[in-house]
Amino acid sequence: MAHAENDIRYDGKVALITGAGRGLGRDYALLLASRGARVIVADNGSMPDGSGEDAAPADEVVAEIKAAGGEAVAFKHDLSQEQGARGAVEATVAAYGRIDAIVHNASFAPLPEDIDRFPNDVFAQMQHLNSFAAFWMMAASWPHMLAQGGGRVVLTASAAIFGTPRSFAYGTAKASMLGLCRSLAATGMSHNIFTNVIVPTAATRLVSRFPQSAFLDWFKENLPPEKAAPVVAYLCHESCKLNGETIAVAGGRISRIRILETLGQIGDGASIEEIRDLMPAVMAEETHFFPADPPSRLLKVAELMGFVNAEKNDDPFGYKRQAAELAAKGQ
Image 1 (cartoon, rainbow, N blue to C red):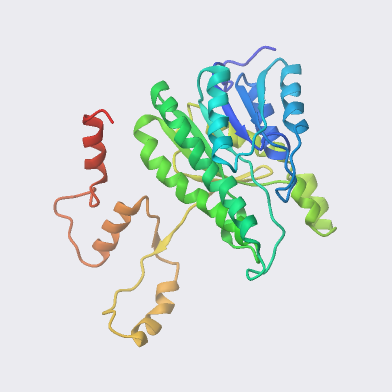
Image 2 (cartoon, rainbow, N blue to C red):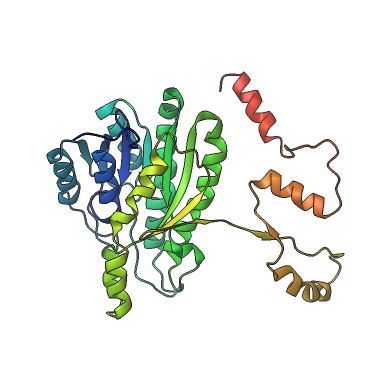
């Protein structure tokens, strides 16, 4: 098949995609493979509630990619265990000699439950499959990305970051992706390792839990998983310079999610009554700013409180100095 001159291609690149046996991950894998990427389909075939294992989904996606002329291998170990998560990276490098992109999409969704009845093991498993697995995979892939001159990372959050009743494990795990992304983005930017978060809304297996309604029919028709794939694929491309962003996609709609902070009110901090009286103005969103990172936020707060930054110091925590010192030592 001929390729247009301005097509975005991934020839020679290698992508590790977790949860790629079904739903969103499957569409990510198929699209990247169709554009030349060699793909690791990482999926142990668990059910939506996190139980069980099934080798078939990963094998089927690999077979589909190969039938279309692409290259792929399956990895079917449990990513919620350190050996499995690090093993996924090791299998990627063993198969293709490099790792250019990681899309961490694997997860499950426990049934809602009151917090005093929520199982400890389910809460822990959710954190391990999301936060810990992402940490372990990045720890294993970091030296490879540094050596090859860069990489792209896409972590998966959810609209659950805005709060879902009785969804404690899922909301906590998905919100953690934002903090991990920002730290990875700040650390990797000077090494051409860019990290972003995707917040997809799509008709996956989980919609089977929705009550039957006209809205559910509309949801299934208008928000298919494949419409999220081009956004994720773009974030994986070496030409994409977005870093530390949270991008939402639902059907053909793409948007940016940001955390804002109101400019607030300055008082003496001397009494509870003062806090009570200031709170309506504190909560008003008419005036706000978007903190880029902790140092810039601290400088903004200091400025609001009367500090004049005559030296134009943009490194109040010493992060840049520390990074420069480590670079000079070759670390």
